[in-house]
Length: 434
Image 1 (spheres, rainbow, N blue to C red):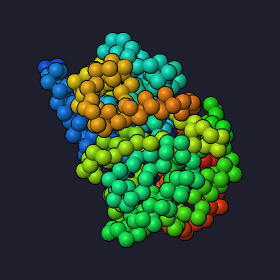
Image 2 (cartoon, rainbow, N blue to C red; image 1 turned 180 degrees about the horizontal axis):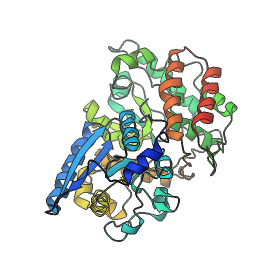
Image 3 (tube, helix red, strand yellow; image 1 turned 90 degrees about the horizontal axis):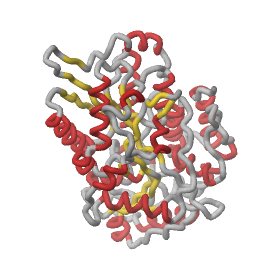
Image 4 (tube, rainbow, N blue to C red; image 1 turned 30 degrees about the horizontal axis):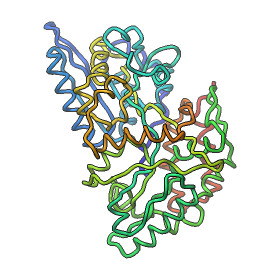
């Protein structure tokens, strides 16, 4: 599984000290008497995203010779560990990618700069749908600017399925039909070297549990951050994979051997549930253009109950010494059409309508596939749900669900009963209710 993992907790620790330091300004950004400004910009992602971003930053610096942008990036878990360290020391980057799972936590602790005064000035947000733009509002402050939209999808390695002689399910497939497909692939791949399995265990992906809850008519969290689901909901979700989890799904031991690759991007499983904008990155890792996107399984009522969400946002650290220039950089990252052509859909389908309209995509390219996928799932009537509310502390719960509790469950060292118990212990510990 590789929905990028959340990996930090305890951000509120030493926040009082960090806010005091924040008032003194950032250690990283700076300027001189000649009007030169240096901004720090950081993001999560792999080498493919870094290559695109570096080209965009070069373009920005050409157009703004008085601004130098220092860049850095890390994989998702390490990224949030670094941001937690930055927050404790009062030195968050001037501009950073912000995840929906963390924006409330950082904003409520006073760590993000309110960009409201710059919207309509240095930062044009008029091309972003108002319903999407509000995802960056916390406590009536615009602390995030949505970059793009994405939705859950099943990525399919067509070449690998062709080699095995197995056909992908129809779009209107059920959870049980997906399980049957996994078993069929695993049987067909038994003699492959390396052995091929149908997929990893989707039940240890938090966002697939969220998708399941929506199909059962349950919004995961209420506005006061209380969770609306019960232990029975989680038991029922885990039970979806009973009978194939340890028999036909990708084994945890092999995942350890492949790390940092996963089952899908190693070429040893033909399907994986993840966000649709990961398509290009996985294609680069697999060195193939022949990947496709399919929707999630259909729920028990015959509908998919899918949702769009901002794939990520841009935020400014409250400690920045250069808010105007930071807002200019975000405006460029979100709206500039030449930059958009470089980034494509690696970050998701552009939230800026102007950038999306100007985006030139090659027929059959990953960019075209992602845009076409989001168009089709909308036209098919699958997108019936609003973006689920993200409770403060959600990131830590997701991390424990996947990286700690889920890992032990994958090895079979704990059973479903203990899995559920520990997840609810994590909710009690980490979720900040209002």
